[in-house]
Length: 392
Ligand SMILES: *Cc1c(COP(=O)(O)O)cnc(C)c1O
Image (cartoon, helix red, strand yellow):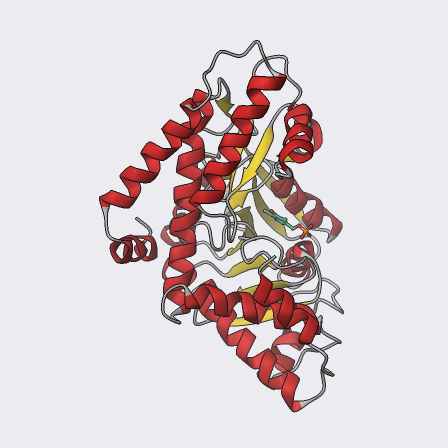
């Protein structure tokens, strides 16, 4: 965790119905609007990311509504389960784990009475990037009345997203991923169309009534007791991101995206040199890279060895992918230096634990170094930030 965020958290000894807290809350909500990159109102919820997902179903649908879920992994499946829990009828477009769905399939599944479309920007369980822009364009070009809800919990800060220009109705973020503070906060931005929809929908909501939060937020308050210390930490983390680009948070976010794209590209180049394969080669996310270990090797062994020998954290596959792949995160404040160190550690673990594999120490590092050199020589850092802001 970022030291500045840790200090802010420890120092956040304030009551939430005070002018001091209202000032903090208003400042953080403003920063979040910039971090999300929108003019829309943002609300902050004291819950994990799934709370904001649930709120996006409870507030935007009525029982019996047809909704479309686009899924290719564990988090996509969560949308289907949530839609069912709130009495909606989900049509599901799915792609195999490690892939993204085709736009033809989405077009074919979209119905006149589809009320909402739910998807991820990046599917964290498989390391896949979905094409939010193409889905938004499809909805727009077909004149669909469906609201588009995007779980960008690992997409924000790792992928270029332009909510307002593309026409995304709800964009969801969480605290423990891109900004690397502890879990416990979720936030979402909602378009005017989404706010209007909430006035007529019939599904039950109480704690997650977004209209109530929006109204309270306009007065600098939260509807219920907020996670005060986490909000202070979030403010400090966003200050840090802004400080990377001279205090400009929009540029700071673009540089965070560029950093993730660089670390992910370095990692992807290194994987074949380790005698391993990428799990999602066709649409890889910059948030996380999923790696298939050599044939016959349990990915859990690699996860354990990295932890015990180097104190390095990678995660095992989720659900039925456990043992079959491991995932390397590029979120937040991991940088190219961390990436090189981790790849070096993976080389050591591979050499010692998997003697059958065919590779030489240094090959993966060389491949990653080449990518880093190409990317840093290709453009000045200012030009790279600008390219990231434009989504190139
Ligand atoms: C982490 C994550 C979530 C939220 O999970 P919580 O455990 O509720 O914070 C949702 N979607 C994606 C894509 C995630 O990576």
